[in-house]
Amino acid sequence: MVLSREEAVRWAEGVRAAGKTLVFTNGVFDLLHPGHVRYLAEARRQGDALIVAVNSDRSVRAIKGPARPIHPEGERAEVLAALASVDAVVIFDEDDPHAIISALQPDVLVKGADWAEDRIIGRDVVEARGGRVVRIAFAEGYSTTSILDRIKSQ
Image (tube, rainbow, N blue to C red; front, side, top):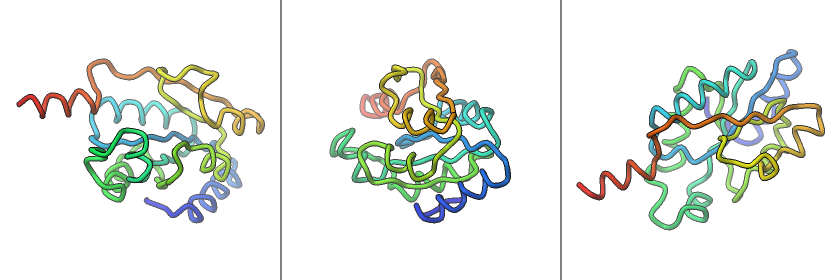
């Protein structure tokens, strides 16, 4: 399900109130590929419910440049929400996820292993509540950039 920020906060509160572990991750997820699917499945295994925060179109352009995203935010969110490993999706407009992490207060924060532990945004919020940060290795051979490069070369 795709939720507004307000709905996502209420949903997250309900997950925690039920005594369940809330897992959070975020990203662009522009061209969904097996690396994304494997990453999200592993993230979901870290707790009872997984919420994915998706960068808005504006924030993607700020981070990746004017040619991105390929798919609009609503479509990216819809595709993610259809995955069995994803319980909820929320779109965020900031350039980094600190505000949405602060609003949702997850128990587990998951990021790709390419992020240095001391550079993971939101770590402070999660660890202050006694939560944990998990870094997951990416599946080799998959990246949106490489897919786009292949398309351009053909």
